[in-house]
Length: 380
Image 1: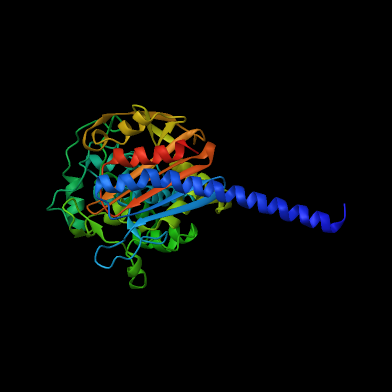
Image 2: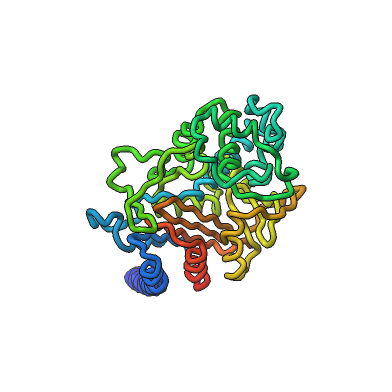
């Protein structure tokens, strides 16, 4: 075949493939619009950023404004608070320390925090704290606990409520101590390890614990249930438990690297696998470190129940899985996160190479987030 005809054929194929891709993008845009626009209206959400990984490509969809005061449109780079989704970052940091031989997940907490020696919580393992199963610690610290010494005193005086490894009580103090122990094992501040270590290694250039002045213009304004502007404030273990601010583009990159870690340094790739192992069974949900997983395919009702308020507010019977289950490609991994003014959700299915990220500048029910994510991915 003459070169001219080959060139013409190649051009025609390229044009056809481009047309098909454009049609697919238009269909995806229409599908996401049909789900997100009614959701925002129903929940009174001012701005949302949605990111999807499908067909080996990232897709971004932006809605509304980042702030009512200046009407700046939301973009893929708008920064949102992600609340407890931050716990997966803390878990990855701890898992990296484990992969590098700097942290023993089965060691008692007192090994890395000698001030806890003699207190029952000091005998709990690092892993149990990271899986909310060391003891039935409360969801939040009491209001009067603010300083590092008050945190230590709180743990030293905590009276056991359950045998370690038998009850899961979702807890910021538990996860916060887990992150603190990972930092102590490496003799560096947690914020340094996160900001200068993990985030940079993962190439997350638009993710912060403290948003710098240079990025303040990207920081969305959150709104509480009364529509008043609010942002997260400082508190004990804020960095470890709920402190990350990030964009849809960076969060999707983070989730994709957990799903496709092949390009990461070996220890960090191993760390992503450590977070996705199954350590405790809680009903239909298998608790990893940060991530929670369900066998895939999974029903919407199972995901709604697993992310429901009872798993946050009430103790749940749990069973230690020994040995821990390996990462499961055919699984739906997810995590929700909220602050007073923001709501976030991320999910991924390694076997299908699918991921979705939902960021909003209002806290709205987990059920609505899960339904939206499920509806988006179910069509892909």
